[in-house]
Amino acid sequence: MEGEEVPPEAAPSSASPLDVIRKVAGYLIDGKCFDLYLSGHFTDLDCLKMLIINGLNLAMLAGGAIVKVPQLVNIFASKSVSGISETSQLIEFYSAGLTVAYNLLVGNPFKTWGEMAFITVQQAILILQYWSYAKKGNLVLRASFIFSVVGIVYILQNGLFPEEYLWALGLSPTPIIIVAPMPQGIMN
Image (cartoon, rainbow, N blue to C red; front, side, top):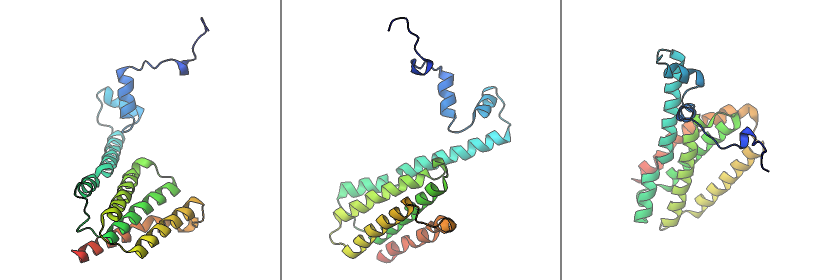
């Protein structure tokens, strides 16, 4: 109705350029550090550490988001998975997926493990490509993989994994990722 005041949260945003920069910088540093840097004080060690750590986290997140893209594009373009080990791809999926599961369960912030979420998705796409383009395949291996992934997701989603063994879930990707390239090496 005419003459009624619009509540502040419903009013159009008129953020200044500095507010926009502050919001973007908020992914790397907090408001105190932003204000220090804005006033030309770059010597605060805590702010510098925060900037470096968060910058590295952001770079790893960006890298994880695109690390498998060239391989995915090459497979799609050539319609061939020649020279790729299916077993290595499945093992790598487990490693990345378990890293994601562990971090979700313990509540770690996404910026500290998000690259593994992107890698898990890309790895799943790579596996689907493999299954689409491979001339032959081991159906028992594929069925076992699908059932195990569904089973693991069910156990973790429904709180059936004992909390006292979370540490083992957190450590499990390490030996798995060490083993992952072995089938590829044997194949080639």
